[in-house]
Amino acid sequence: MSILINKDTKVLVQGITGKEGSFHTKLMLQYGTKVVAGVTPGKFGQKIEGVPVYDTVKEAMENHHIDATAIFVPGRFAMGAALEAIDAGIRLVVVITEGVPLHDSLRIKSKAKRMGTTVIGPNTPGIVTPGECKVGLVNTDYLSKGNVGLISRSGSLMTEIAANLTDTGIGQSTLVGIGGDAVLGSTILDVLKMFEKD
Image (cartoon, rainbow, N blue to C red; front, side):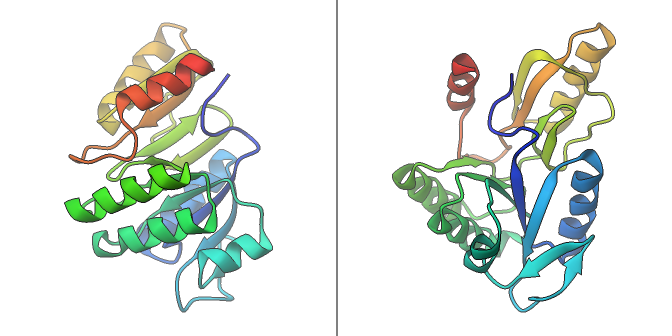
């Protein structure tokens, strides 16, 4: 089984027209992730890797079913992007962005708690369910499908552990990089509880 994401998860990319957003959109699509829309204010009508771009999350939600969003925007814009996604009703918000101001992270966490939204990050490599879906920038070269869940604050350590598990014939269900910042949307304990229910 898996938690948070699977082969049916429909993903939005906020900041899709930027260097990081467009690059990782391409990699997510190559992995098989269903990236259905992107958002960059002022870029409505463009397409990135065939993915339609909207000015707002609300516009994207009016045109597509969206389960999760990956946020690839500069630190000073991350709070606005996350709050916009939460307000629009997206249930999983993955804040890839690093350098998010502490007070902004606190506001994101508070709003998410009130709205019942799961936030992963900020400063996260993202989430992967091997062979099904990738939301973020986790290296998937050494992953294999299985029953072991991984949680880490460090993306490189998480990938290294997954590679060692794969080498010994142990597959992974979901890898969750919770992020490396002082204030995180979800803690290790939060994610452990999700795995426990799985």
